[in-house]
Image 1 (cartoon, rainbow, N blue to C red):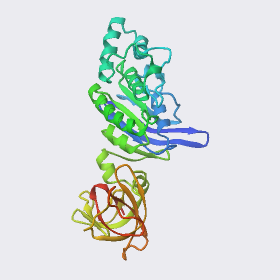
Image 2 (image 1 turned 180 degrees about the horizontal axis):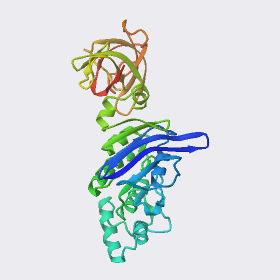
Image 3 (image 1 turned 60 degrees about the vertical axis):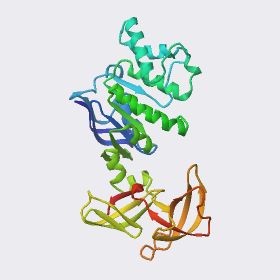
Image 4 (image 1 turned 30 degrees about the horizontal axis):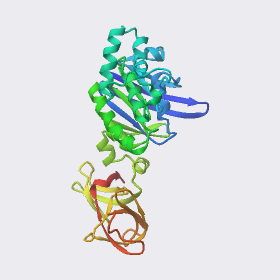
Length: 343
């Protein structure tokens, strides 16, 4: 029971924006559609909503084809990047819009509005003008408005990308809680993997109009399907490895690889995969360093006779005591920041 997309294709002239996509969302599940800008994820969402005409394929709910059903009758709620609130209405008036469209009596509207304002953490905000709200508060109102008619599917297109980084991280955690409390079935489009992994039960990674990988956040993060997915998920360096008895061994260290068969593999090293450690087994020379908020980002030239093609790697060091450029450094592999890929 829920949404099914089968072989969906959307063309714009000779260009293919969405290419034979299959996906499903069961009721009560949050699915994140994750990918870089221009990969077709927003076009896919709009085609599911009925805002784009598919070239081929079907969108169905509980087995019923939605092709003949107009946007406003699909029972879907929409939240966009800018919220698209009505500036001439107060908060309560914005939330009430969908309720009025569905013919909900005024007394029931007031109860539902109060319920939703409490849900999104804005109790008492009903009389406020939306132009007086912060960006985060406006997105909460947009979410409450979309949830008001109790949609069977909530579609969120980059709902947090217009906010600053700190607010986006906080609101992502709040939104994850809200969606669970509301029991919502949702499809969230985002280019931010932290956001996707915070919000979603499952993640679909999209590139060039196609779904490249589908799975739980942990499985996608730990084992990207291919090089393209790995690099999109922050694996800047790929090195050869050999899996034996559930352990992937490499020139920089070993990590668990229980789901991989014995044989060749690759390790994808994220920015924090190598850490400065006075007792670390790896030796190198700091080429340059950059201050971050809670650590120092190092670029290190490793001394690896077995991997001459890997000349420089990223590593992290403490804010206090990280070696300057030109100094030697010892590093240790942090398995938590390493992905294992097929060879």
